[in-house]
Length: 222
Image (cartoon, rainbow, N blue to C red; front, side, top):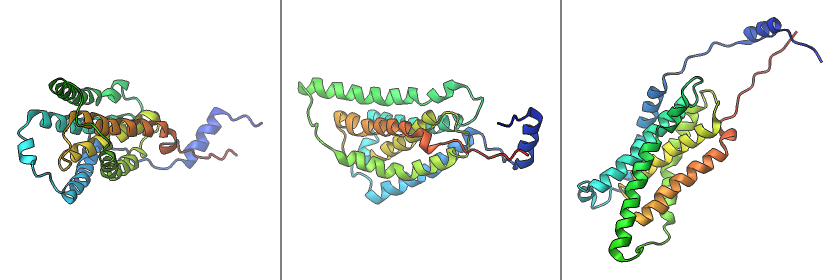
């Protein structure tokens, strides 16, 4: 087995090195993704058609809070995903979407409690696979854009980056879904919409190493 001297290795790496273009700051990449992803989701929202009672729903503080919390979860998850691909960034940045995710969950949970207490038990709950299917549909293009962008960074935390990227895409899809899907029962929302976001985020984390692998370069030592 040939022993490689440090200076020899440095010369070999320098010889084969290619010019590297510095990536924009994570905040600018997150802004670009948000603009592109929001445009994609908006296109689908108008394709399905805005809900007839949207004007009335926009006057409800809880509806505004839930949609805003989902959207802000998406924006902060996108920023965290891009930060997690930059070596040297603080680890706490990966937790940036959690406060907004908690507000979203609390708002839905409070609605569930009201529905249960006012009706002496859970009511209006049933199967609604259409929610999950539409969230998946709306999140496909945002997720594709996200992973194309994060792959340009360093995959130092593939599980976290993949999970945050999926959270960004699916949260944005869930926010868009509320604008045309007329399901407003909190119990249904927390299971079929919020639950779908969490399941898809967890699924993306399990395949993070495959989505964001290290790209190895072979170095010839002479």
